[in-house]
Image 1 (cartoon, rainbow, N blue to C red):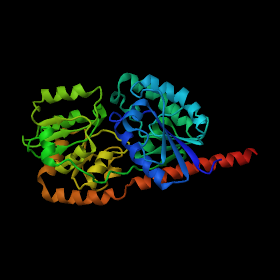
Image 2 (spheres, rainbow, N blue to C red; image 1 turned 135 degrees about the vertical axis):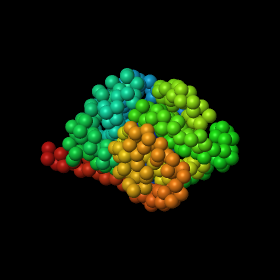
Image 3 (cartoon, rainbow, N blue to C red; image 1 turned 90 degrees about the vertical axis):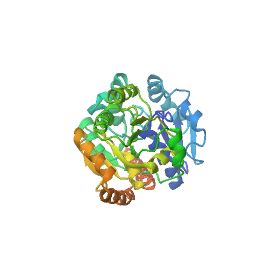
Image 4 (cartoon, rainbow, N blue to C red; image 1 turned 120 degrees about the horizontal axis):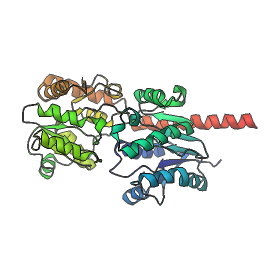
Length: 385
């Protein structure tokens, strides 16, 4: 074994600006892990799009980036590369442990492996994905879970669902919470409002991908029942389901009251968090719920679903609602817009709650999982010798 233990990072799912929370997870965790553990040599295997967009310093100077000649936008090509091409590249680069960060992995990597399985929403809400993608995940995710020595779940709720759906023994799962995103440079509010055509209305912000389980359709129906005045702003990466929301906005007469934005820059997102009066997150199921944590970090009052991992993340720092109850969603938004005592309490509680989560803790927890895998491998080598 070399002086540095070489860890391969399977990022073949990563298409910048198109993979949502799993992109955020990789891009924030990996540089912190590299800095925290100089005894590890991290080698990131990426798609052509990721390399072209992010370059050799995508994850900082201590992470080597190896591009594979494959498009992450082609599901079939990506799966073929992950299953057939990646194991050979791991051997060629002397990888001693593989960490797949995007819920799928090679079935036969040929070396010890760790899988971050963000959620099993594909099983509970198959409509959250296109039909082809849902079918692929039904095959690939269980296969990946069986091949990994250990599975990282990003919440206790996700871990419980992984055990329930995939029958993975709880003792094979490690819960490692994600971190947030400390406030950074922001686009000034006047510039942001002018460029994104937000006018001067109070902003209700909801950062979310356009997938059915995110429950944005019910949010639109609930918002339609509020008095005119606030503007609902919906940034998030586009999906094949985008058109359904545009149709709902038109059908509900919300054209002037909703802004359906695409993927926005970090500075614009920071500006939206600062300009917003409240944050609402109506998702039916989450592995973690990173936007809720980001809103809390900024002291923005949060209203969110009382389901899956969200109470685990938000604790006592959110106004919870039943995501199936339009009246409850509507009341929650109205309260956060008008009740100054509630707004102040939730803002302060959110900042305090957010301190419990950090990427430094996530990096330490991830490295501890690697150590468990190596210790098991060492014990097996000793037993066989």
